[in-house]
Image 1 (spheres, rainbow, N blue to C red):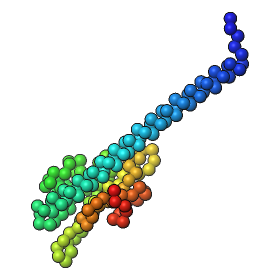
Image 2: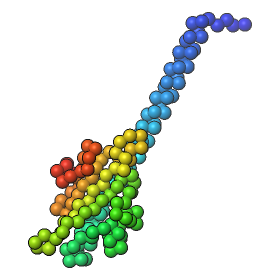
Image 3: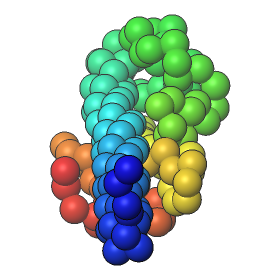
Image 4: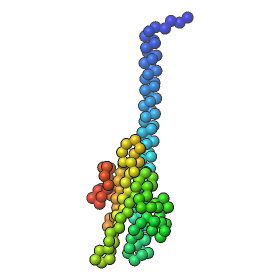
Length: 157
């Protein structure tokens, strides 16, 4: 019969603890990577959606004598915006989308603003980290990682 020393008992326990810590670290790293991937997917879809809505507003404007659609529902009916954008403030892929339209100026010209803001910008249920903005005067999308709505002054993506 083999005798076990107290030292071998401690060595085995220390090795077992190190193994468990290693497994926990790998699980944490995989969960973090999966979360980051989900956030990146939401952010990418939001950016593409803002670009698509901007393109569809321009298409709508050509069809309607320079006027822009005042609602997402108009864009759905008139220029085939995705049905996911029904309603006043649609939530798509963890982002709240909004669209505003100005009154016509002296020459009858309107402008629009489109934003996409994460539904949950922080915490364990975070749906996105980036806030997006575009308007009818910009040829680009602006974005910020600060926890606030993006504006025309934010960097271009």
